[in-house]
Length: 291
Ligand code: DGL
Image 1 (tube, helix red, strand yellow):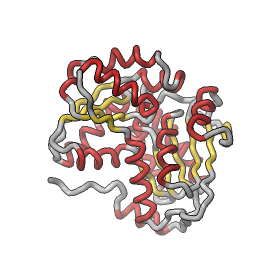
Image 2: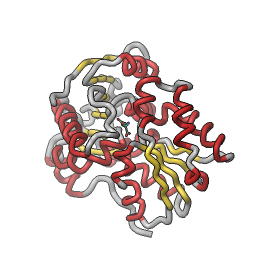
Image 3: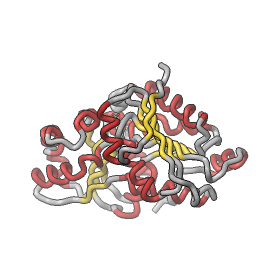
């Protein structure tokens, strides 16, 4: 079996170490909308003392249908904003942006913060739990067409057979309706694919999808008459962020866990969902992302 692939290279760490960082600096997280909130929710459980700054690029949601270069330009602008806020770590809490822009954001950030994505921790999890199995993946067109999961899994040579299927409408429907019965009609169409019947596990390769995890499990069972592991990467990613902060000696163990949310367009659905996750006290500000 090939050696375990590291998310952060020695060069990244060397660059990072030349800039002074302290554990009290915030963690920056971004997504196109509410999807990244599923990751923030897991981060709050794993790292209750950390200050978090979240950016939801609601003005440009959905990312999944946009050209790679467009997503890259949004991602770099958001990373710039998070650097201005002195984040010690920037987490791309969006599969589409992780697929399209992780390398570029890392280059742009150039060691001024640690940059992480949601794909690498999930790949490492799959390697340790589902080697030599058949794994399905649903995500946006950007994520699926990038073939990034397949490429990284194949590099590990762990015998996972990956079947990826684009479920493009889902993220926008979740952003609009949350966990609502209307979603079942869309799932009916996507999850009835015959190719999905042989899989042992299904990766939710879009950070919006954990919001409807139960419906996905139910609809899958309805069509394929079996239960499978539904892999929600939010806890996996939160664990990887914690590990990275520990390794870099940047874990904040004495903070107050302040949370600040920004959106590029104010939407009722974002505000409502953020409240469901984090209660009434949350601080939500408008921050336009110039085009
Ligand atoms: N939450 C996102 C992802 O993980 C983005 C969905 C979208 O904006 O299309 O891919």
